[in-house]
Length: 329
Image (cartoon, rainbow, N blue to C red; front, top):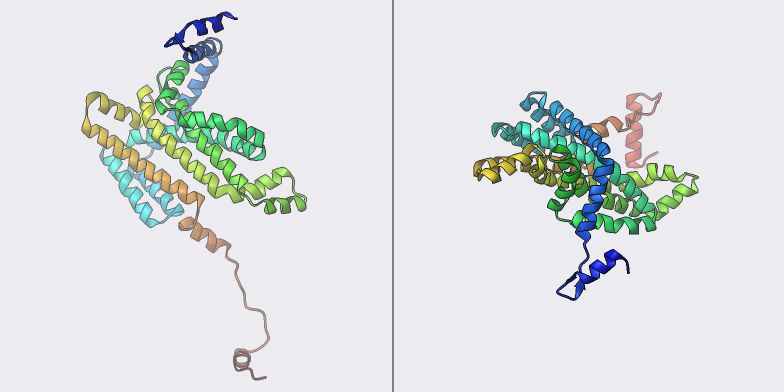
């Protein structure tokens, strides 16, 4: 019997069950990764920090009320004027509570986390939809990522990236990624098999079927996955404030440490407003039943019917119409 097996057998819990040192194994693995790949993770952390800071500076560059009006216009384009008015009033409230810069920092973190998560999740979902074996392999991984308590992910990312925005960003990506994979796979699997067979019958390649048949038909479900990724990213971005994630998460953390009820509610209300805006916009983008953008697109693509050319005079045309109506020759 090898040494580690003998030690595990001798170190038994309550004298019966051998202790399995999973925590020690994981800690040793992270120590090895940090020792051998530390330079890579430092470069990755710098890239993530620059990305979040760049988007945050871009969002904070214009006047707050001007950008709030842009968000309201976006809501009107994809949904309706009621959501636009609510967005404008909500964003104005964030400005009045002096939480605008923090909200834009949180939004920048969500944008980067969502983009990275979707770049990983959508290809994995497509591959899982095409391969049952890969789906069986990846499903327990997604279960682990989604059911593990959110605070647990903060420990390993801090070990690799130390305190700061990169640690919060990586934890957010890990926590928000699974719905994108699951709903992408679900959407593609729900596409009618007869439609796919028709594409094969017309000689389409698998890539053409994916791009022109499966993805367009699965888009509502895929967009539901995008919506869930954004919502989970927002919830985790607040928790990431515990490890220096910045934005509204840091304000919530500060309110807890100082027992500042007012600051906590101001940051919390700002999170709610941001969440409602993102939820309405992404949900409407997935199912564009209404909205100014859809109305303009429908009007632009509506076929124009022109009257057929005729040599008859208006009076003769009227006589013909009356004959058709009465049935006389």
